[in-house]
Length: 184
Length: 174
Image (tube, rainbow over all chains, first blue to last red):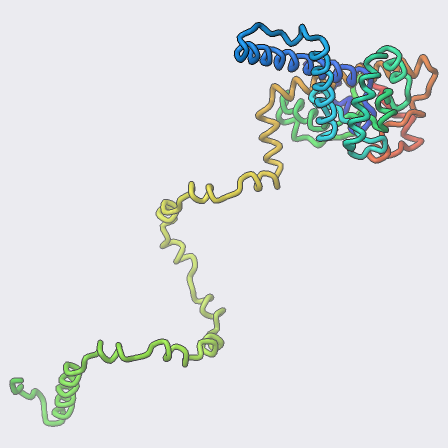
């Protein structure tokens, strides 16, 4: 579990450009979720077709159809969630949010462009990842194409309160000092 | 009517006759019939209620009222027993009430304790590793952390020159 020095670290990072590790972890979570839900849906389709036609059916054996369905599902997954709230499930877990380059809420067209270019970023994962690490605002290829950025959105202040409440209820009543430096 | 003996003198005779006459008249009158003929609404309309109220010194009346004495007579428990609290609460928009207070967020935070604890730890670890990578990237590229923007201009105010040296971006231990 967290040490006292870990939670205050992020106290003042809300709205800052998100780092590479958090972004990659969120992307991995999203890809895993997309794949898992796709497998569940494919299994449901297989069972439904078998019940209706009486023949054995496996969607994954139809490579073109299954790949098309997976790409379409991934497109809908990212575009819908970014348009709706600026964050996917994976990003919500990691406390990240997509915003426009100036910090305002992302628009539908930007979400579409970002999703399309994300596919290219995934194809060239390593060079795009290295470029993102070097880039000053840690914006990846799809961010630059869609004029977006990824920022920390989780309320670290509330997280610290929760952590203090778990450790010592009396301590949570003490006034918070956002400028308190983290312990070394 | 039987004749009555007159106690006292003749000086009380007129009084007694008057009483007898009044009793006879009262018995003969049908009060209900008379009251039924009275147009109460018309009577009330003729009354200048505002004029009467203006004459009343309400402050003086209120000062005369012994509120403590009245309250002592009130059986609060019996009063409360008559109140249907369930019906009262059913009419309240609790959600709207909670939205206007910090109570909603407090309840939400307390009821999702384990989940939020795990999330907090994951996020804190992620931020720590982000800082680690950013620090080494800046070191390899010989880049000053103070030269790197913290965030989008609408979300993060531009850093002050004096503060940048003390708190560089993501320069945190991991």
